[in-house]
Image 1 (tube, rainbow, N blue to C red):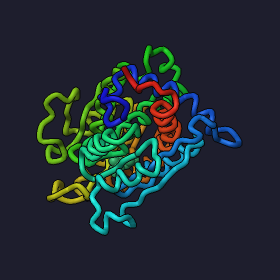
Image 2 (cartoon, helix red, strand yellow):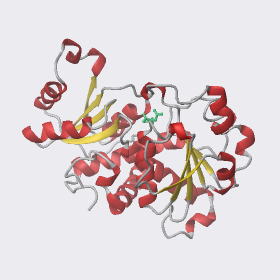
Image 3 (cartoon, helix red, strand yellow):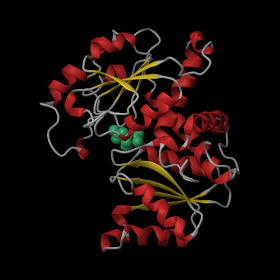
Length: 324
Ligand code: NCD
């Protein structure tokens, strides 16, 4: 792994993922207490450094840090000295000088969390968690997705209890804008590490220029894939990262790749529907499907807090590296 930071799923390895998921299980219980707080990170400071819009990921990390009794410093790029021409490096080192133990970094450019880790390494011991960098990676989203599939299947279906590992042999379809999705990149790596088989379903224009080395199957026929999958994972069309028009029209996209109510009827009885949010109802997924019992979209959000507690605790609390 890349030392003490969490920059991508590859940093964790299968054992690292398993370990964090076990730890997250214990933090779910903390979240249910009347006072959902433990003292594990008292005296530590976590900086929430989001240089790109976010609702759930930022609030989830901040909630996780607070539940571990860490102090939280929130940095908002729009009201910072970056607007006065300060460089990203100087901004990061300024915050570090105030005494920060962890930086949770989101940025629209791939590679920024790794760059921040390099700068911080020149001056101290602070750790970096990648909260989403461009179209590159979003490792804590992948962890919470693995966690959600594991727990939901165990809770809902007796068949899940007989699997040696919850994702072993599962078929997961990831549908939509793979090309611009850091969630897809991290999910493919994590699902594969835990033994699932992944099929990408997208129009050719919404696939990365090359899938060489990706451990996936590929389909352009959503209706053929839906009856065979255990999880249908929908992605948003990420317009903010599109430099040209990738689909003829939203209407046409929905007609071919949307999980409409009639397509959802093709899913097996045990199939879960997932989405990282934000959801654009009526485009990649129909509102009634997003709200149906097989949809675990809000459970993903709830589980995100426990998973991020596990990550922060592991990196800051126990002193042990995540993964091998
Ligand atoms: C995703 C992201 O920002 O990468 N959302 C999230 O973190 N839950 C996916 C998206 O924006 O579509």
